[in-house]
Length: 139
Image (cartoon, rainbow, N blue to C red):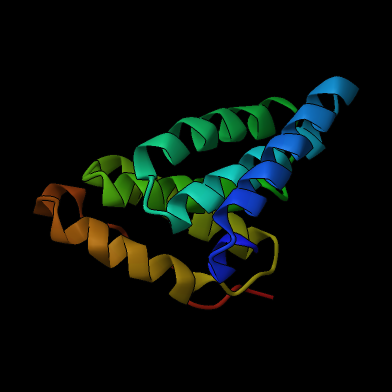
């Protein structure tokens, strides 16, 4: 991603262009990916609140159009955003959903989900503690 290389202006330009094209074509999958790309760019910059808006819309879009392969990524990134804006209960719920979603798709993302989950749990009460997460996808 361009933002990881510090090319924020260029990354922002490409993300907005992708959104424009996806909206013009009325293509939900492309729009979800474009929103995710812009939200990813924002999270790299630490703009968690701005990313949250896009990721919520992206998750709703994926659920509406049954884009099952994208739901875990949207849930994961939204859970990460919630962890960093101190909405621990929402973060834990979404990260658990992301972990289950990744496992159902056969991906071993347990460790990736545990890192933000630990951050979220640092800010929540024992009531919001996560349930057990699969560290390996069942095959």
